Amino acid sequence: MALPRWPASGGAPKQLVLVVLGLAVAGGAAVLWKLHQQQVDQLSHQLGLSQEQVSALKDQNTQLTRQLESVRAERAGLDERLSSLRAQLVSATGDLERSQVAFNELQDRLKEFSEERTQLRRQVTSLTEERARDQQQIEELGARKAELEQSAARLRERLALLDRDYRKVAEQLAGLQTAPHPGVSVVSSYGPSATQPTGSAETNQQGLPSLIAGTVELPPIIVRKDRAGMSIPVRGRLVEVNEPHAFVVLDKGSLDGVHVGMVFDVVRGSSTVGRATVVRVRPQLSACDVLRQHTVGPLQSGDEVVQRSP
Image (cartoon, rainbow, N blue to C red; front, side, top):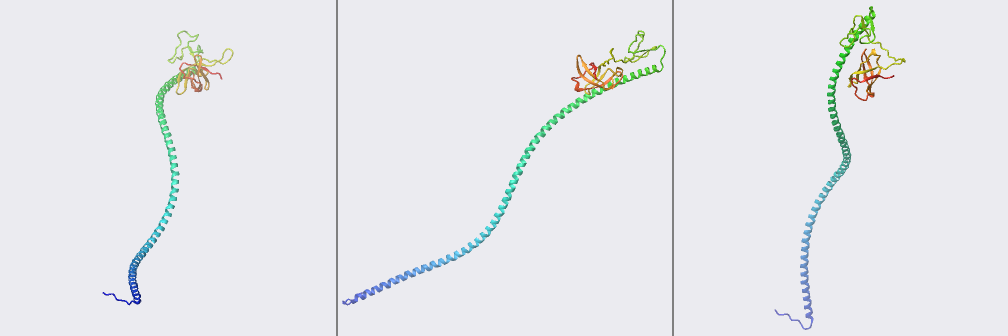
């Protein structure tokens, strides 16, 4: 293509420059417009995306608001539950403290019960041992009781014999006092009389004198005074000793001046071993209770007894 020719006057280049400038400006404007249009499209696209994001965010905001309200409601419920739990915790703490105090008291009581149980076991053991000893003592007492019953039976037999002999002698004495006969003499002691012929005295099975024709023997006449007129203490011996019942029998009785309440010292050798007081009197025997507080040891048959001075 041939280029146009411009006049040489100089006006044509200026116009050309203007045209070129105009074309350049138009091309730049078109480019700018295109760029602007692209930017607008991008911005429109971004705006649409932003609107979608805003809508999504609004939906999320709505959901979050609802969740927030639900969370607030749950929080209110949790606060109420927390308050209730705190009240329960305070109550449980008080119950725990009271339970601790009660537990301590129970431990103390358990310790006391343990000590009491130990003491009771000891007492039971002691009572069991005492029961065994008591049972043994009961058996021993049963055996001693049988022996004492036998001794009592023998004593009753002896007392019965003595009472029978005493009644016989009393009847003989009463008969002699009411109807005396000439030639009858009275002897003041047991045994043969000085005026009685040798071999004329007879005795019964108990050694008591019996009546013989012309002679009557009476119980001895008791005179308990010495030459100066002073009383002589009664002396005798033990004929029976019942140690379990603190009971003794003397060979002296009312015929010898013994009376209830009289006190005797029991002598063995040169030592005084006991003391007894008369509780029952027979003509030739006396029953006495042993005074344990004045008795140093067991008494024996054959021990000497001496009347204690008042």
